[in-house]
Image 1 (cartoon, each protein chain N blue to C red):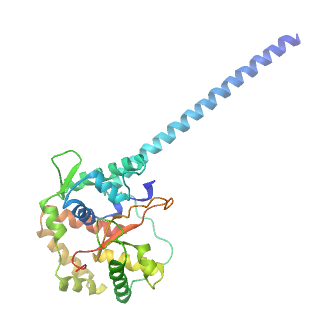
Image 2: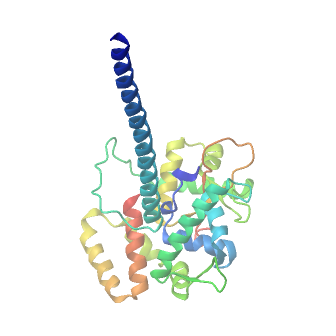
Image 3: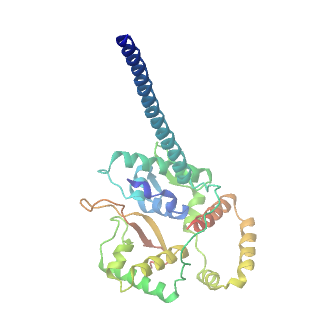
Length: 158
Length: 139
């Protein structure tokens, strides 16, 4: 009698173990499908962003401090730094003479990093500088992204 | 990975500028990829492939808007005649200075003047203006 009961119990346990194994396999498969679907979603969204298509999502309200307007004086100071960089430093992008990066300017400017970045953004918005791509990373320069490179717009570079 | 580097970080005007820098306006998409993303021939092939897709997608859109054209060979692109006119175009220093110095109280008048000018320009220039405006709004 006991042997028969054990046998039935064993059978029940075996059945449950099999169901558990199938459920694990099912979950694993669905997780992989979800990851694949998310990757496909990201690819499509990246292509839309690359095409410059503005997404219809409402803009998120920005938190934090209000942007401080960059004074004409600071812009003029940065332009002096840029001219200094052009005269004394190697171009950030080899085949664009006079090209520079924000870190390159910060290294020689007597200005706070945030001031350099803010003034550079303002000059870019005004069209006085233009972005020309990313400076090519040198071997051994570590992980992370190459800095954005800029040049003076033709009119202002004269 | 170049996932934090986006081609949408550059305006159409800047992309046209890069094309001018690289090959007098005639470039291979791969060259533009290297420039936009800071890659080279030794970079991770997956990054280069991803970058190529982004650049080609952007150039395809710019072609629809009339700013660039496909070259004779696959993968080659050139700035269109209209694109070149827009790339090289400049505002007189006095006009630019006047706009930049205008106060908030003249915002509506300024928008009205630009709007009137917008309506009188070519279809390609109109789209280019709108996209440049959108680019700056996103910053």
